[in-house]
Length: 563
Ligand SMILES: Nc1nc2c(c(=O)[nH]1)N[C@H]1C(S)=C(S)[C@@H](COP(=O)(O)OP(=O)(O)OC[C@H]3O[C@@H](n4cnc5c(=O)[nH]c(N)nc54)[C@H](O)[C@@H]3O)O[C@H]1N2
Ligand SMILES: Nc1nc2c(c(=O)[nH]1)N[C@H]1C(S)=C(S)[C@@H](COP(=O)(O)OP(=O)(O)OC[C@H]3O[C@@H](n4cnc5c(=O)[nH]c(N)nc54)[C@H](O)[C@@H]3O)O[C@H]1N2
Ligand SMILES: [Mo]
Image 1 (tube, protein in one colour):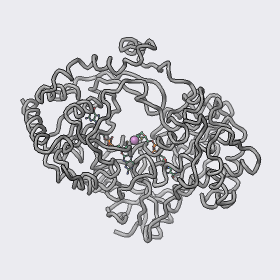
Image 2 (cartoon, helix red, strand yellow):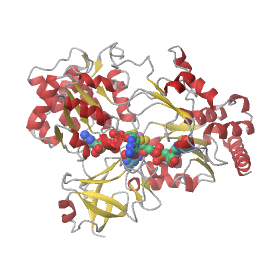
Image 3 (cartoon, protein in one colour):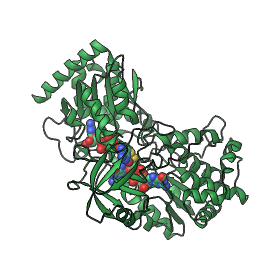
Image 4 (cartoon, protein in one colour):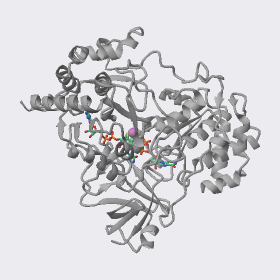
């Protein structure tokens, strides 16, 4: 009954808004959720119903992907097992125990057979225990570290520009500082920089590129300097080398939509763009598999965008910050109740997710919600079919390689046979067939702290949550971790309350101490709850990355003061 009523109301409102203001006045915002492929079923609906307004850019991996597409023509990763051939593995800005668990056994095995592991991260975490050497640079200064290593290799005569375009533009960047100058800018010992150069010269050396550092204003430039280091040191295409950032998890599947849109809202500028939209304004917002109020920068402005919309639908298994702004919340299955296909975040295998428990009554699969809605708005026949039928449609490109729904189900997981072990085994897919090195003109300098806000705010993944999902209630206030000297300078001790302030806002927090951290960082959990005053994004300004329309979440500067 509730289901029918909700769908009648939604159909009536969407039809009316489309009739009065056109489909561009309806904004469908979809994020990842469980990353199931059928989460894109709603895209197909809003394309057929409109096309409506959708997001552009990608606050998760946009800058890094665009960087590698610019350099290599494609963004994908070498197979994890290619690391068995590595002499050195550089884990550049990743937290294996929290967000890259699949790497832990691989890094351990690598060290057992004598390969070295280096971790480069301004934040000290348990990943350092997996590494032979831990380097703790100034935030966002990986460009200087990478350029310093490149220059050291050039000075030693151990670099080659044969496989590159734009060698001159890149050499101009290398000429801006001496090796010692680059090390000083990165706040890394010259000795540590040279040892890194030794490893790149001694390869095969693989770079595993983390995602945190590309969520900066110079995020694209950072990844491009790493790409250049891998390339000119001769490691990019050799077995055991590579510069791996993203696994094309949707790559093997068919797409359920063409990507047609009436217009775009830039994801990192969600609040601003929705509020500014005119001719027509955004009148309705539909959210699928995301919690933008908690997870996008400048949460207050995102919340204001929802407040001004006259009709909001949120499809989510949980009553999130965003769902609290909805006129209608459509309950969908949790991961344990879901039925879908999955690509992976950190390797090339694909799998099927099957329900382990049935969802409660009135909790409908996304496919079913949209089929019933489609019937009500005159699109029924284009969305008919069982969940398995739609899975078959998604798997169609793999049929030629012998992968069917039945074989996937039987085997549990499959590595699509058309994905190579090494991404560039068949050459570099740029127009020139060479790597396009970063040009001095496209280089973006790292951000500097704002006047009066000397500390970098890191909002990193934690073991307790997937973004805002399963956030364990951290108590009344969010905990911030700082070096003891940072707390002492503000007259604060462990367990005490303090104010965490940025140019954007402030919140009450509780102090935790960690003497392994730099003296210019504050670490808080990624995710959390905006309405409870526990979301980093309340403090973070909405600013795009240099390329790829990512969000510069981590170029947020703060100060800590007494309560
Ligand atoms: N448990 C858990 N797992 C997750 C997630 C989660 O929220 N919780 N999120 C999932 C999602 S959506 C994604 S996209 C991935 C994210 O994957 P990652 O972004 O790789 O995840 P993080 O653990 O946040 O690790 C980022 C690391 O980058 C470091 N870093 C930040 N700035 C810099 C810098 O300037 N230089 C260098 N060298 N390092 C820097 C941070 O200190 C941190 O240790 O993880 C996924 N897995
Ligand atoms: N400060 C700061 N902010 C960040 C980041 C950071 O590092 N720091 N990281 C950014 C990154 S990498 C990402 S990817 C984003 C993540 O941003 P979001 O994707 O918005 O974050 P989640 O909290 O994972 O929200 C996903 C929602 O989808 C719901 N969901 C799960 N399964 C399904 C389903 O089958 N169907 C539907 N309809 N809903 C479902 C979940 O209950 C949850 O509410 O956050 C970004 N925000
Ligand atoms: Mo993400």
